[in-house]
Length: 204
Image 1 (cartoon, rainbow, N blue to C red):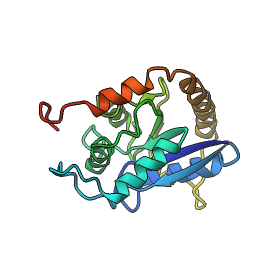
Image 2 (image 1 turned 135 degrees about the vertical axis):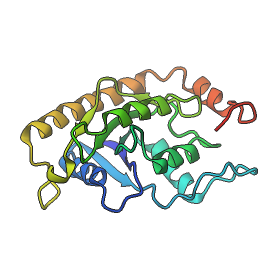
Image 3 (image 1 turned 120 degrees about the vertical axis):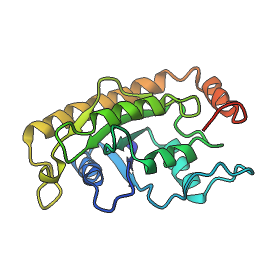
Image 4 (image 1 turned 90 degrees about the horizontal axis):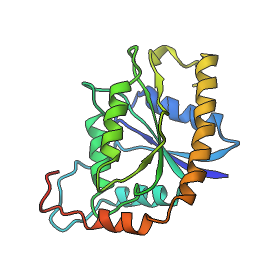
């Protein structure tokens, strides 16, 4: 059985992105062990001179490293991901590199019509950064618009077509994770490149 980490891409206590990940964890519970992680308790990234990473970030990194893949669900603020998600990814690429060659599936929920499409494109750019180097599943957007009305009282997606779409995307992600395991010959060099990326010569 696959082991997957779900990351709630916001510090909001009421986010429908959390609800979406919880539904995914329950709906695909017979195919994968999915643990949903929060980022809201991470401190603000401040590039500490001693490169000391918070224990919570280290714990998250360890779980990501041990997982077969990661699902990140992001809302959209001002055509971008949240400041809290950018903060989390900054910690998770500062002296620790759990995302290097890690298969990632991106989902998103928003109150409006577009379902965080621009934030998902923004997140793809971030995950391609030299210190992250994630392997993002192509053509895999799951865009949940009008998310306040999308779930029933038990947290289940109400729209059968959306559930069917998610079923297909998850099946593709399982296959994607298997393929990425075979494409790991350059992992050591990719990890070295991330570790050797110069903090002194690049802005963060």
